[in-house]
Length: 341
Image (cartoon, rainbow, N blue to C red; front, side, top):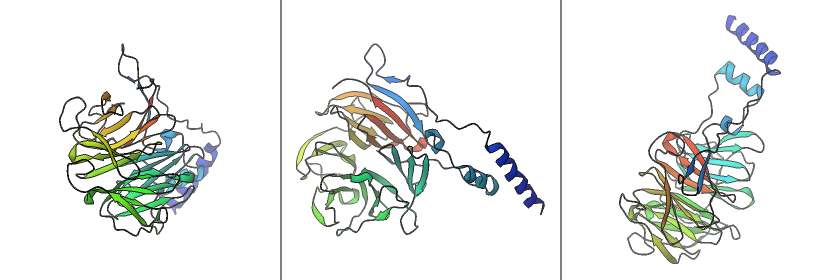
């Protein structure tokens, strides 16, 4: 009885205070960190970092906050982010630590943690790709499956594919046709599926020759249709056309400038730069289309512009750069502010 009276009193107090409580404003950090340092002209600027809905100005509703206070609700936050994608101001973050995909809907001021349509968890969501009409595609390496999150949906729906995947990781979508390109890490190849789930001609096999892979991980499709694949244990990035024909490659194993140790995410921007996330270097490396190192930023740490086992990357149309800073439990956002390469 005493506990019930206390809960009722607290409920009334929260209602009384709710009307006069100040609105929580988005956490924005000043853009004061740039690379490279003076006297060289800046090319990359730090924008912000986020881990929780509040960091993006998204707050829980009044009655949800009351329920959390009374019944001990948990605070939503990134646990082990692996991939990130932005769609019309909505940010999706694949998070094996949370066993789902976080959706930060900034235009609506809403947050969701999305699971499978049958109510089951996504034990290992590691790849994200933006499709047409606001759809987002998700790979789960443990379930060996590909899911789609339709615009506004509350769950991820498993796709019916007519070819078995061993360990799907990276994924990309060809917008016009809806074809899916899926990195199958354990099979050392890129599987290709038509929009209806039927299998198309994939490419790759295990090896170190041109067009061969050794545990590839993530990939990126440029607007021009070029596919970039991080060929992780060959310590390089390979480029293909959409038919899977080899175009070029760059990278080598080492600890010097431009070398690679454990490359994960890859992406390109409108200027033709190629961004490569290296998890062991804790760095974001930027190359030109020919594979020449232009700039490297990052080191091991928790401060702005520092990383701890970063993984996925996404570059938006406005040249915003999102990096999943996995063990720092956050996404860091940068922007390209320089001229052409």
